[in-house]
Length: 444
Image 1 (spheres, rainbow, N blue to C red):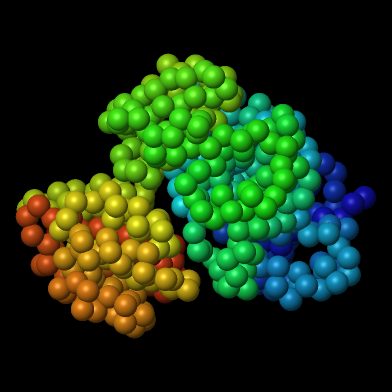
Image 2: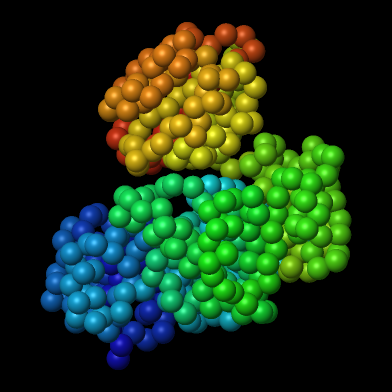
């Protein structure tokens, strides 16, 4: 009997453990931290052996194969020891892919993954496809493969998930953009991060499709230095008719293999240039799945924005409050500011991941009237932004932050939480940060 050890007791790990159990393996799950009660219940229900709060090396290093949760780095001592012993280390997605013949629509990029994944899923579901939602959103792919049946899965993939995928293949792979992010996991080398993202193309054949943003210089450079049999479907915000999707006088035009249709940009439910890109990628994927253009248009017009991504909260005394807590890197904040009018009170701060703020410098100078730095250590933000906007203040809690923003913002202006940074210095997650923002705003 094959022995499979799962490291990590969250959504991904528990799903992998259940799938392995269903397939008759000897399964053991281990997590150095605590395991949430709902996941403990699943493990008990499926009679899966597990431990929490420590790692028992003797129970781990006798594995035939290890499934590593995305949050566990390859440099973790236990992973290093396992690989030194020749034990294969894979991802939950890799494991799940072995046990389904469903079509895989996989989406990656530094920014916009979640919106594009949910939008693609919405289009597919509205069109009547038997579709599952997995990866960084939805339920674990492995859990769905173990307990459900879908004809197609729409999967959001981070670079961490792609790191340990080897034989898995995306029938449709989407690359939205590549900007510096998570470089601490990649030896602070952009080329390593880029290579991880491009693993989404591995194993693709001439029967498969690669959808990508044609205007991204990193993607373009990488494509010149590699070979792939996949069919290429570029999209652009320019009026570039050589692309599969492009903008032409306010119309989003989609032309997949000669079948052309269009939709006014103003009729797309989610606004902003970044959401035009997301809509193009989702529309190309849907067209490749032979969904009728009428159904795609209808779904694009009815889709509701993702929580914590440019989410409108309320207007008070003429001041709009926007929750963009999901903006955990500089490029995300660039897109948020690009979609704003002048007069922004901007909330920045959190756990800095090696950010270069020069990317948003001009937008900040043009549109931002005040910055409130919300974090434990705001020294890097002050070093870069002091003197570039009229006001730069500090806050150590969301309540203090919103009080300062309320005092600073004037009628017709916008308070924008778009932090550029991870949330873990003051909050449990970006969701926690966004939820606190909304609660404090609604309590004004």
